[in-house]
Length: 122
Length: 493
Image: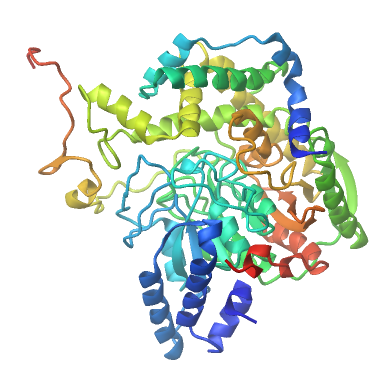
């Protein structure tokens, strides 16, 4: 069996969902998720990601087949809770080290573009 | 025998006996990189001067009879998502980090230095460790040393290829859903994902924090054990690092585990498994039977069919949060042209991230967004518990679980890049270990007719790496796969 055939048969698991060809995501939703993620997508990217993310969501939708009522969510598989250390001062990075990789710095600060529009009083 | 043909264990013995110097070992490794890496492209950066300087320092200690560490003089490569403060960049194979220099060493990098290892360079990966082929690198794909037209697997493909091509005897990788084990299988080397919390993640650039774990690559089980020994242990700087004693992994390595009950999940041998991979893995299982192991059919009903789906929700959700830090403010690149702060974020991130990172960050943001959180993220966490239970139930009756590491041998460059979902299915047998926090290793178990390596995956319960390594070694003793070297080592440019 060739590799592509092997992949195809793995994907037969979702064949039924695929046949329906329901795209669970719209272009508007992809744009919205892009904005939430602070990724300014181009038109071409919106088109490509709409198709690709729809296909992935279509696949992960198979989780709905499982009855998970009464099953507690597992966020972390080891029983570690509230790992604390004594609240004692420690040396951290010096300002010049912390700023060494910054695209723009000013004195001991990270410098960022204007946040408020001009004309808006602070 | 050339220095680069030696395993790490044999190299460190020879170094102690002063058969050759650490500087000669570093130079041999650097020469192999110079000769081969133009074709393999395993390394993103090579620190020849630093490596030679460190090696010379080790030679002084060895000559003076001072303790020089577990890995004294052994060349090691480090995946480029682990911070190094020595002046080498830490890139995560992403444009967004630019030429960022980390202000501190990762815990594992400190451990390597403390044990006398000579870090020669940083290896290529899928951007931010997101991928299964090392094609999603902003700096170009790594090639498989067994067939340069094929992928080395990923995301730790650079580390796997560097060890397979004998450029270094040891390398560190990270495994979030199979990123050590799958490239180890595709490159014909040993790759081990330790229990979550066994190795500190301090200084490992975060992808999915509840799944990420650092682990070793080597050509032999003993070499992987040696590197695990050097890096494992509690570190208070990683609150998920576990204060559990580290056993001596090498002391009992040659002792077989007897009796040995091997669980074979039928879900790992079903549709989608390439028949040649199936045949090679079955042969390996037969070798265990000859050693007296008992085969037990087990069922992991949630761990193949649903693991990929649960994994890609959990991992992308965590990634969408972790990668929020790449904002063009604190480090890395900022877009040069922007109207205001938000626009600067939007442009810096769209220019700095590759497609797979964008897809995963957006998928995670979607799964966590209002209206979908219950249906996707919470649902995936519930399935995660079912997967963990599958393994807990299985380990009541068996000592370990075995199956193929990857459903296919190495695939061709470009074959799966257009279809992200096909790429995700490369991890179908590996992701459940990460969701369940348990340990897994891939060991070479033979070749396809086309001469591509196949890996056997062995899985054991949390904090049983000592037994896991012994089980792997039982098989390795019976075989000579580690002696084969890939064609690229022979061929002249």
